[in-house]
Amino acid sequence: MERTSKWRWGVNRWFVLLFIILGAIAAGYYAPILPHIQLPAERYSHTPLFTLPVIGEFYWTNTLTAMVLADIILLLLALVVRGATTRGEMVPRGIAGAVEALLEVLYNLTETTAGKWAKSIFPFFATITLLVLVVNWMELIPGVDSIGILEHSDHGYPVEEIAPGIATIVKPEDGAEHNEEGEHGGYSLIPYLRVLSTDLNFTVGLALVSVIMTQVFGVRALGVGYFSKFINVGGLFKRPIFGVIDFGVGILELISEVSKILSFSFRLFGNIFAGSVLLFVIGSLVPVFAQSMFLMLEFAVGLIQAVVFGMLTMVFMAQATAGHGDHGEEHAH
Amino acid sequence: MEAEAARLIGAGLAMIGTIGAGLGIGVLVNGAVQGIARNPDAAGNVQTNMILGIAFAEAVAIYCLVVALLILFVG
Image 1 (tube, one colour):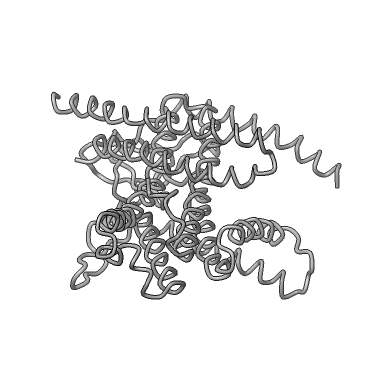
Image 2 (cartoon, chains in turn orange, brown):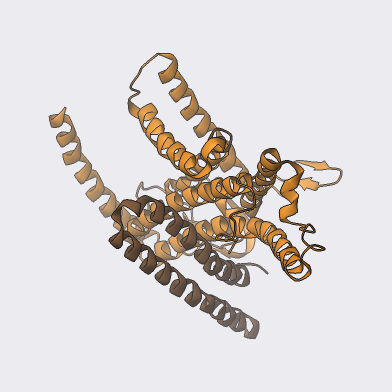
């Protein structure tokens, strides 16, 4: 076993060296250029897929493909873990063991924070964390954001064919990670895949789910009395001065609840979008090797943002179930 | 070209707001590390709250970043 891993390490070292040299050669032939960066997700075609009566036209965007891919990865993960548990292994190994360890950490965290509500809150926490984690780490795969369709546009680059016979789709030919934007010219590139977190629709949707389910948990735990946290008229007649202050605090709670949506969605979106722009810029400035460092940074950022998104959801839900005796330490910003 | 220059300057100015977030995170971690040093048993609890606080402080910086990105890449 030990010998095998040693052997593999010896070979991997040469692979890394080979990729660095190949990358340097490829960068000499086709220097990477800064791609055209746009905020909304790119559409595959200019004709809408179908039109809905109220919402409007529906386009299939590349972030939507990324979402389908992330869902498939999560489902496969779930099937693997299910297979391990139905086989009756007391100590799951491999991927199942890793997932078990991760979920155990998350569950213990939920239990210390939420107490008896841990069983209902945990699914949201774990689902959001796992989904955001898979989606963020998709940024690290070479080819995401860099392989795609070439399209005419105003701010394009001159085109150059690499492989003969392929006029519209140009594949980057070396395996190193640094050719983030491929060779697009005359045209601008529409990647097949783009990181899902760089689409505001995804982050706003997730934030809406999180905030609305927080209210649902509050009502489940405290009944209609939960809303007296926001519209606090109880003390208005008994204690005139402090009653008014309490009422004002209630209004502030309401505002902070709405601003949670903003802060949730922009935190995830801003971090990941800035990360991918950073990768583009570094890749175009220093084509060889430098991007690896930043890929490591993005690895950490993706993990931290996933955990923060899930943990904030969990803490807000725990607070909503705890009644309004002890709030005040956390507001949305 | 004038508008282009103004956009670049504006994006740079928008990022000034991150000074506050940087100071805030510094103060936060300072307090958390002192707390852990005095009471190492409470490290887990302090760390959880520290990360939450950092996330809140960082959100302000991210707003600045989003504004800068919007100025640069939209319109």
